[in-house]
Length: 237
Image (tube, rainbow, N blue to C red; front, top):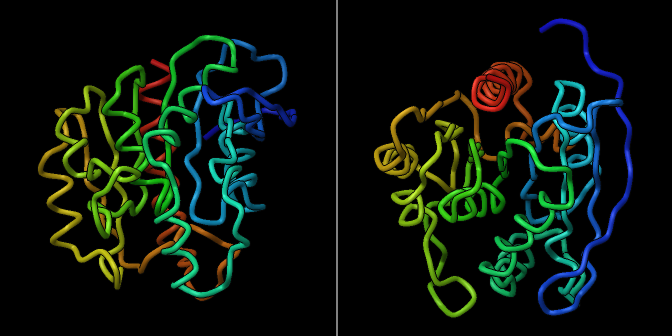
């Protein structure tokens, strides 16, 4: 991949439409103010140490990465069980989160932009890309449909995917216990021209090397190579 860029990190804050101040983490190549931008839609854990490491990795690849804390309004502490995680998703105002992904990337000097997301963030990435303004989208094991549709979750990711104008890379695990291959293939079937569905011999959240119960090192290495190659083709050319 060639020599990696030296990176700089910073914390920023921006004001959302409702007046709430949203913190975000930025990692970017030093001296590359016009490098392409990537906004990261996080997992249920928000801007975790792992999401920060993803931002740093993208910066070393030559991109300016920003990860906004989309759970800044959530008053409830996050537990360690699935029930707590699903409750947090149920409390998330999805249209607002999608808007704040756009606001976050707009804090960086204008250039080509992409959105990448993981798990919950994968679905948010598809929803964000459907709104336009991105040159590429990477959906990493995002759920195609919400558990229920309501005012906070009005549009399913698979329905939004039908409106996406940019190329999408959809990354899923063949052994994901929550997202069957048939659902991943349904997402892949509605993506625009130039998109790709990439299936790996792994389970859910297999890219996250801070979760030893989930991480699949060999498959993650293959997937990251495909992700960075996809981003280069769509943002650097």
